[in-house]
Length: 384
Image (tube, rainbow, N blue to C red; front, side, top):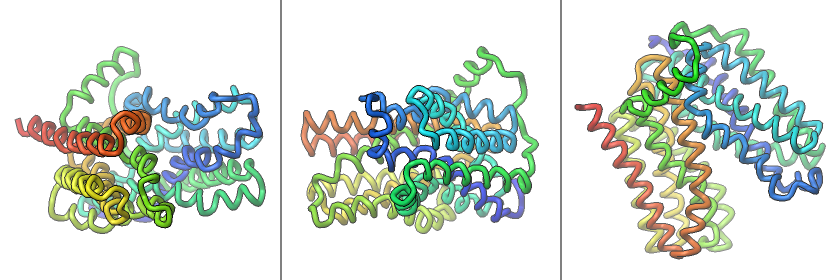
């Protein structure tokens, strides 16, 4: 690890990460406006949103393995160029099958960025700064969604849907050009040729390792709850507070992870802070059980989840000393994160319909406690 942090390149890589998050967010924020362009799509239109996530579930670990072999700078540049190309193509609003195909390519581009960028950031960061730089990286999704709501929707209102795709393409292309100029390759690279048998063996190696697999294992429980809770909680918040609280929750998560989270990482390990975040989140859910929809409890839940968010990313270089194992861990994180996001909301909605509000809250409590205990189990395995 370097002795001096290259902060300009770290922030540039974070900016590229905003583009990767934009591959999700650009569709989500205008989804209600796509219907007129695809009037006969029916339920298939939903795949425009979900295909990127399905690619992550299927190929998350695969992406980590491939990126570790073809080198991180090369993967990053390829992914940004592919993302820019797909956004330009989408600006033509092609037929639905072609739009869906472009989203599959975008899913692979997204995976390469979310594996390569944090691995590069860790390599550019001094040990004393990794808590800050990787917590910064962990905010890329929340910041990108906020920016696209604040700036993207007015752009669409003024110039139409294609303008958002073009703006996203320009963003990705600019970061590809800048990184090609200033980013040097990381020399560490996984050995061996790519083969189906080798990739399957590497999958087993990753998920058997209590160091490589631990961040992704905890992340599954976090992602199962975060988006799902934002989806199912609003009806229980007083109407006069509802929009403000739901809008503030992601921002509170980011603010807490960048302040209290970064400070705490100077005193305890990232895994321990992740566990603290899970416990704080459970305490907030118990508060919500006693006072349904209370704004302060909602923001307390967001704060606890924010600690989990930042500390999870910071735990990867603490647990894994080489770029190769870090890339594998980020690949596992992408896979479990997409799985959690995909199954969390329908699962909590189903439980809400059967067991009501209390059943839904108790389910979230048990899931988040599962995140605490899976880290405890992985830590025990590392000790022995």
